[in-house]
Amino acid sequence: MTVCLLPPDGGAVPYRGVMMDPCRHFVPLPEVRRMVEALALIRMNVLHLHLSDDQGWRFESLKWPRLTTHASSRPKTVVGRPGNYGREGLHPENYLNKYDGTEHGGFYTQSELRKLVTFAKSKGITIVPEIDMPGHMRAARAAYPELGFNGSVHEVGCSWGVYSEVLRVDERGVQFAKDILGEICDVFDSPYVHIGGDECPKEEWSASPISREQVKGMGLNPDHLDSYHRLQAWFTSEMAAFLASKGRKLLGWDEILDGGAPEGVVVMAWRDWTHAAERATKAGIPIVQAPSLLYFDYAQGPEKDEPLSIGPGATLEQVYAFDVYKGVPDEHRALVLGTQAQLWSEYIPNPKHLWYMAFPRLIALADVAYYGDKRDSYDEFLQKLPARVEELRKLGIDGHPLP
Image (cartoon, rainbow, N blue to C red; front, side, top):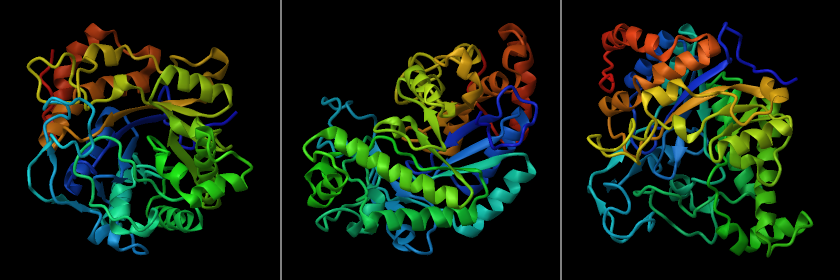
């Protein structure tokens, strides 16, 4: 049976994490360190750093330096939520969007990240890095148009949503991906390296003679969409093999199941997550549960009287009632490595708001993941919560008001 590569520490599940997204809005390094301290305090043990996306590249690459000089900054940022101006869903680059006209950027040097890894390890926290590929490549394509097709030039993404620009996955694109993941492995010592794999539109591939020839070479029909899911699966297998050569396991969002996931990977179930969990575990693939319930960029309950967010989300009580094994057949429960909350930052523009959205829900999830069925009743949890919140305040963290 596949087991988690994180060292056992007595928790109900060995992987207990939260994802931070410094791409949509940059998170200064001292605040990342503050999150590490908070995770250690509440018995979580993984910080997943989402280091690249359409709206900004945050990892210093020495082999591809324009990712730092060009892809780490965007000229403006969309204001409000797409759809507020009369046309729901016409993003990115909705002609009705409004922008702030302010440059936004930032990145972490390799030296800074190495020090962060050492600091986190001293606190019992593993930093899991993510470079999102082959989708979410608008920023990388802005720096290196040759990573796409026909030399088309784009600016770094300024709106939210899913962009159509993807990585070409012929020899040129694969070499880029291996170069970046090689640097990632040099900086981070995590047993897992996340490659994203989510929300990868197939239109560019299906229109490109380069990609069409690739799928023909695989014995597939270039006019069938499924052929391009298989192309992404082939790319994922190449990355998994490369990471395995470095002694690492590939971790990816559950789209890596589409087209067939290679052996030796771990799936982060987020879409129709009970279905994704069932699909993965039936195939013998370990999972980390990351459902929409645990998307803490959503409001803490109904949106009424809450700051602008992506929409209504889970209450504190709903998070505390979360079942880590939901959707997993009993005989496959050992394949559930753990769970993770997400803090996507489209509507989290600064650290103060980050803490507001993360806590106290993150405390509730930490107890679910560490204590499992042995956790306190919800009423007991609420009685002890004020003292725990006060400990976070000593770290400089003020969260959402308690219920």
